[in-house]
Amino acid sequence: MKKAIYTILIVLLFTQTILAVGFSDIKEDHWAREAVEKLVIEEIVNGYPDNTFKPNNSVTRSEFSKLIQEVLKLKIDTSEEVIFKDIKGTWAEGRIKALVRAEIIDTEDYKDGFKPNEPITRVEMSKMVVKALKLEIKDIDKTDFTDDDKIKQKDKKYIVSAQNAEIIKGYPDGSFKPNNTATRAETAVMILRMINYQKKDGVEIVSGIRFDRKNDVIVSDTQDTNQAMKIDKQQEFVMKFFETLKFTKEGSHSYVSGCLPEVPEGYRWSCAIEIFYKDDTFESFYSDDGTGGRKEILFKTNENFKFKLKHNKNKIEKISVSINIVTNKGAEFGLFKLKYPLRTLYKYAVKNSVYISDGVNWEEMIKW
Image (tube, rainbow, N blue to C red):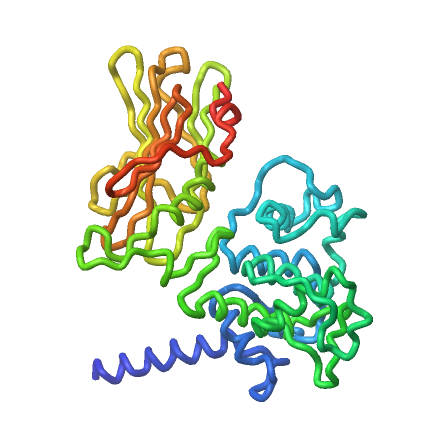
């Protein structure tokens, strides 16, 4: 009897999953059905309240920006900086600004404003996809498309790069139609190709950083370092963290704030911020080390944190920030340590330590 009940439950759950992604205007033989269903299950795209997907509707610049930002898992930019006046206060403002900061959207291409609600063109999509995936770009004189004369010279290299990666393709008549707008169905297929490309040969784009599981990890016989992320690749993620880290004074109180960026699947942050005071006391803020200890503070990726310090700046003797990236199994390799008031960042590898300063504005970060 129990087996029968379990079987019925499984069938019901499976049926509900199918129904959840079954749109009335996406039939079984629709050419984009597989892409739409996979992206709905992954919660990257969704349909309309009337159970339609509207596959032939166009996609706006805001909507496409949201898709790219979510695929790359970029942190939404909540700063007050105005990059485009016409996106201020719109639902996609933080996502668009995140793409600008990641150099995926070039403000020079939108000198008259971003016009977020306008349909995005195929050439715009090509440029954003190539920059998002960090694809190889080579200057070329001509494409193989029959409407090559309709493509601006400066855009040809992006279109060919996206074509070579099989992310964006031409039409059956051999044309590219650079100024055509893409439909929701076409965009779904394109985004799924992006996701599959990221997984190709173990390559991922995380927080705007290209991570290659073949070349960016250490393969070792010992658990201490096997599959650990190489120190130079860790540095790329760590520098993104330090760019957000701030020690500030607000009124009579001092604070530490920041945000840990997303890291590749199978890895996690190990982070400790220690504040030493002149009265020989100290306090520590830790990320979860995975052992059940150090639970005073749990830093979460892609979420801002802000903690009030016990004493003000004038009572602080020194600050030490230690951070590295470990695997879920505990493998480690290297460590970064920021020290204040020295304003130095040290990188420690297994056998040596090397001083580095990678363009982080320490005066801006320590702006007490």
